[in-house]
Length: 402
Image 1: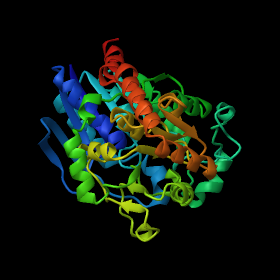
Image 2: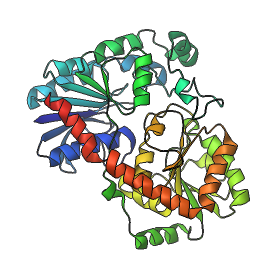
Image 3: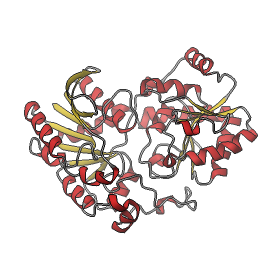
Image 4: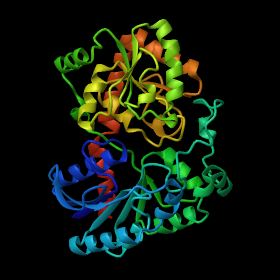
């Protein structure tokens, strides 16, 4: 089959949805399919060979925030480029990953003119919310009652939040374009629930998968990196996401103030380099942005990973990567982490707004390394059995063949 992967961002070095698009393209090509990529770039336009894959890039520009709710619907220049591209390649399958202001949702309608098999993977809430979804986040939630959370994001809530960036027709028009998709894939059941509550239909849950073997690191490599970072005698907690409020930075920093009172050699290893956090305290180490193919070494030197998001986090790749690296995970209850992290078995699920509870779970794992090792091994086995790349790809291919 000739398969087109459409993603505004496509790179072996990025995380998130771009990483999933890359992994899917590589895996499909390895199975013998003719895979081509339609992607964006701020600097380069045209064909290139990247990691053995033919990639056609179009120039994309940054757009002022208050205009993004319009550009996510139509972009005539990109539509012309996409039509010209599809006329040349004549695809059997077109699979979209990232659609937002860089690549508008109108591309779905164009794709359907060239093949009846058009798929869209929803990685986030952008199909009904212009920014991260956090209106439901509350300290009252825990594992017992989080299923009652309501993700319905009303017209009025959008107006109050987005103000001059609010487009009253945005979600209605996006739902219209989504009808051109043969099937919408949701990366978690919780995201499907959120999409459904916001009037988006025709959804199948397909959890992302990962190749666990690719995330293994030898002990000499672990020791070498610890020495290079001067972290040999530290108990390391990894925060692998960007330093943003939505990712629970305030909460994890506050929790760590408590952690170091009990575990003085604890250290928060952050894979970001924002200057405003550089001098926060001596137990925060900012390692800078790390390419995805180097991430496994940072998981390996860590004792555990934390995912303390205080927004709807659909299905964080950090959970999969840490578990593939045999590390326990302390993850947020907000979003899809509950579908991969098993509380008390592969890690802990917490409400990050309850900072004391977050701190206690970190302290417990740092003080009980045998339990941490056991949880890490359980997580690794779970990835191999339930969230492996073969199972993920097999579900997608079955839809391609229908």
